[in-house]
Amino acid sequence: MGIKLYYTTVTASRTVKSQQAEVIRILESKSIQYELIDISVGGELRDEMRSKAGNPAAVPPQLFNEDQYCGDYEMFSDAVEADSVDQFLKLA
Image 1: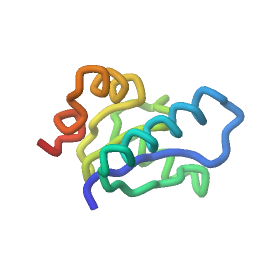
Image 2 (image 1 turned 180 degrees about the horizontal axis):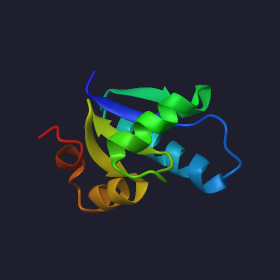
Image 3 (image 1 turned 90 degrees about the vertical axis):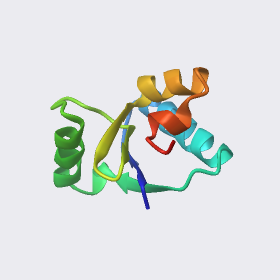
Image 4 (image 1 turned 30 degrees about the vertical axis):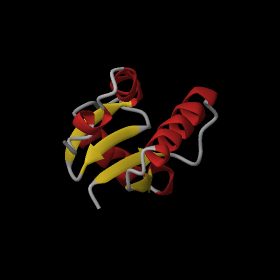
């Protein structure tokens, strides 16, 4: 599967929870298949996400096409507004 969504099931941040839910809702509404990767199960997954994103402070949600970084929530949201989600996710 191509699209990977790094997210967390353990967060006190309402912002992170709502952003994750929004990304999932949009991916499902567009019938885009994706794999969820829960970084709360181990620090190595969080570190992997941050390394791949090139940002040591990156927080979920983060989107990738395989190992190619697509962007974070803000960038995804901008792509949704511009109706360019397929290009953002490197599907087009």
